[in-house]
Amino acid sequence: MKPKNCIVVFGGAFNPPLNSHFFMAQEVLNEFEEVEKVIFVPVNKNYHKKGLFSNEHRYNMLKLITDKNDGFLVSDIDLKGERPLYTIEVLNKMQEQYKDKEICFLLGTDNLKQLDTWKDAEELLSRFKFLVMNRDNDDIEEIVKSSELLRCYKENIIEIIPEIKDNYSSTFVRSQIKKGKSPRYLMPDEVLEYIEKNKLYRGN
Image (cartoon, rainbow, N blue to C red; front, side):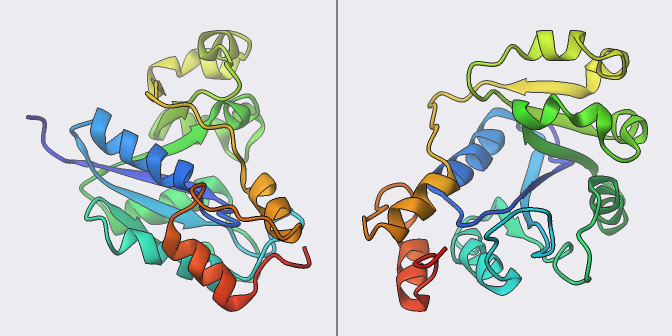
């Protein structure tokens, strides 16, 4: 068995967190023996995304689930300041916190397509590994080939092939709640109960 020396950072809005998010994180733990923890990092409320609920609510919803899985953690690293952190800042802070661990970043092919435009993209790709989940039947090899920067660091881009595909999004779930329809079975019961108790997403 490989030593567990890898920390995987899973950033996102988690607005709200869905079963598919937690399934994706569990797939990483299942597939890579060297992964010690998957750390969920919700983005700051000032991130350029409409309809984001408060940092507190999104953090609390994640914590309901991560507290029940020894392989999961949730971090407020991007929730403390007035502005959202760049990915390079998040990963650098994680590396400071876990000095003896390898830091990896989990993302989908939708973000992989834009990775070469991110702040300090070359530093990101040279220092950290990226675990990529396929979305919409994208061809990861073709995405890498299409970018000179991605090609240079292709050894740091690792594809994850999930056994189950799930295309339901948080946007779809929010629309169901707004319409008064139940999103049950798309998210953990604990998250649904939290949303109902706090009357979230009804007018958004």
